[in-house]
Image (cartoon, rainbow, N blue to C red; front, side):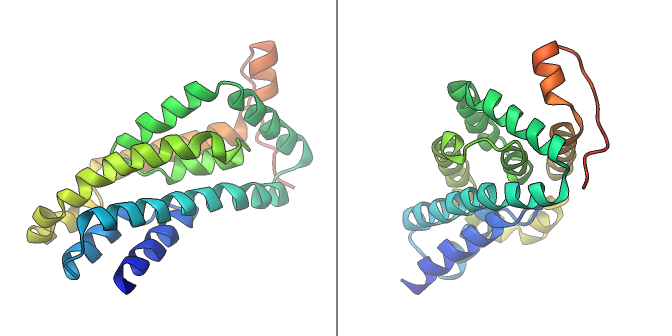
Length: 196
């Protein structure tokens, strides 16, 4: 039972950090193989921990953002969050599909948090997509353990680099686009003076 608690805590911790770290599935694979744990319990406990970690990330990032960006940009981000929250099924579908793709979800959730989208809109879609994608990764864990050197090289693969680049572009777009001008006046306007 202690090892399952460690799976939960580890998955929560790696998904609560606002920068790209090890994926939660790698923690699940490690504990499942090292301690010969039941794969289904590892998946359920790990995905719940990961989901709670992402939820907590979306709660504290807006507080940090409000402390470092100026009032005008903060209002712009709130406007964007309200606009995106109005299209619930579209954002849920996007999060679900994004979660199925083997790229980090940290940039996605950082952008969701910065845009001040209500986390409960995206958490169910994230949980379902995360469970499916992590199930595939954990089941592949035995193979991964037998090929540990290849896995170590996989942490710096084209997928992780592509995910990091997409994440940085997404976060820059959230911060530097004047969303009110774009969504109301249909005109792209960049604003780089957003810091307090």
